[in-house]
Each structure stands twice: as C-alpha cells, then as structure tokens.
Image 1: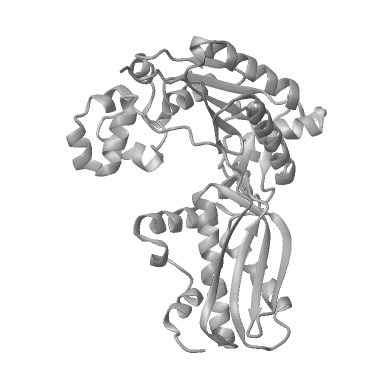
Image 2: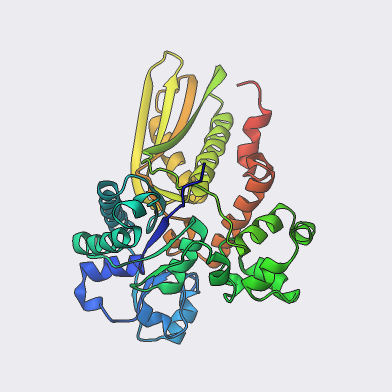
Length: 390
C-alpha cells in the first residue's frame, strides 16, 4: 500500500498590519510606514516594504528606525482591526478548503493532499490567492510543497505577492543554498553558534552527521538536522476557534485572608498568561470570578487593549477583584478568565513596551517551557503555595 503524496500550501498575508492600515487609509499606500511604539524605547512591530528598503525590520528599536528613515510615517496600530481582517480571511479559508491550520494572525497552512487527482493543487492554490484578494483586499503569498516546513520557507523566499512550488524530491535542493537563518527554529543565538563552527548554509548543516548534531545541541540538534534535510511529518492541525482561557481554585477552607487571595490571583493570572503566550495568542478581555461561602457567585469583566503580558493582565485582574469583593464574606472560590482571543504574540502587541521588557518575557517563558511553570514566578504568587490555612 502506497502512502498518499502530501501537498501542503502555506499562505502568508504580506505585511499584514501595514496592509490593513492602507486599506483603512489609501493615502498610506506606497509610503514608508511603521507600525509600533512611537516612544524612543518602543519597537517596530511591522513595516512596509518601502520602509524595508532603508534597512528597517520588525523588532528594531523605533529610535533607530526613525534615524534610518526620518520621513517614515509611524502608526501605533489597531489590534481590533487586525483581528477583524484576520477573521475575514479565516472565514474565506473555512468556506474554501476542507482542512486548514491557522498558524498565526496572518498565516495559514492548507492541506491539499489528494486534490492533484481532481482539480489540481497548483490551480486551486492560485485561485484561493485570488479569492483572498478579491474578498478582503489583502495580498497573500504562498508556497506549495510536500510538507509544512518547505512550504513556509518557500513563502518567505517569494514574498511579496508571489508564489513558489517545490516539487516532491526537490526539498533538499531548494534548501541547500539558503543561509541557516532561513531555517525555522534557528534564532540569532543558534545561528551565531553554528556560524562560529563554519556552518553558514543549510547544505552544510544537512551534511553534518546527525549523531554529531545531537552531541552538540541535544534534541534540538536532531530537530535542526531533520529540517536541514527537508524532513517534516507534522500534520496540518484543524482550526478550531478558542473562545477563552481560564483557571479557578476552590479553597479547602473558605478564607478572607487577603494575602492568600492576592497570591492566588497572581499565580492564576500568570498561569493563564503563560498559556496564552504558548499558543501565540492575545486577549482583549479579562474576567474575575468569586464564589462566596454562601455559594453566591459574582463575575466582573473588563475589555482591554489586546495583550498577553502578565504585568498588564495582573493590573486588570487586581482592579476587578478590588471592585468585586465588596461583601467582606468568606471566599470559597476565585477564578480568572481571558476572553476575546486572537492569534498574535507579545512582541507585535506591546507597541509602547521596551526591548528590555520583551526580552524579559521571552527569557521567562523559555525557562518555564524548559523547567516548568513553577520554576519562575512572582514572589507574591509563591506565597499561595506555602499557605495552608486561611
């Protein structure tokens, strides 16, 4: 029995934030446009291709970007609009294809396996690209290949407003001449380590014995070797819209101990915030739930600017708790729920945050993923793990 040939397309909305801003204001088209924090310590969340000609790129300090291109137009950004257009494209995908994965706010994987026998994968992908433009006004580029890895790299190579198809069997040849930085999963630190060892192209990386890669980098080394050789069996994960992320705690003994309640609120908010970042999502609403000893349950919620940063979520959650807890009765249960979820990540949202804050969250999350969530947490959140009595 032969295995069916896979055909995976990766669709990426070109300069998505910038494109949405240009749809809202046509006078911005063709201009060097920056979306991000306007302060000197802010970062560039997105930039137009006109701005990129000056050497500007996302995550660059806004102060440096302004120096490179003084005439650039700076817009703080509107996550509500970006989420709305993302949902529009998602609806187009749902109406057009049987199986797709929403990888982020502006990119999708579509499984076209089997379609080559009936309609033709190339033709279908091309028509889907045209349909997105016609119904949303947004330009999308795509790569078509035998797996998700190759299709994504192909898309990155052909943007903007392009398409590239890599035939089965041509994966290694396509990757070979590319720099190692083009391979998903290789960040600046890993790239630096590899270049120091003389590994500058994916071809060189693919020719290193897998045993040596494992010795150098452990499980990560094996994963990079597989990617360098174009190997990727990961499936397209069917898209399912998640409405909220929540957690709650029922105390063994009803309590009015404010220190304990505060600590539990901190711990839970950090937990759901980390869960949100693991899923590369942002929330636009926070809700706090209390259940008193007489089983009366009250909930208060607030709409916020889209974020997944603990310090902003905590500020909102604590404010809601203070407004909610007005009976001075014993508390049986406390809960935190994050709502209005959209795909996105920390860096592209906190327009006014500093690079230091962004790096701090990235480092904290890296430690949590490696050693567990309880390895790093706020001191006020640790208290609840030690207190046993109200």
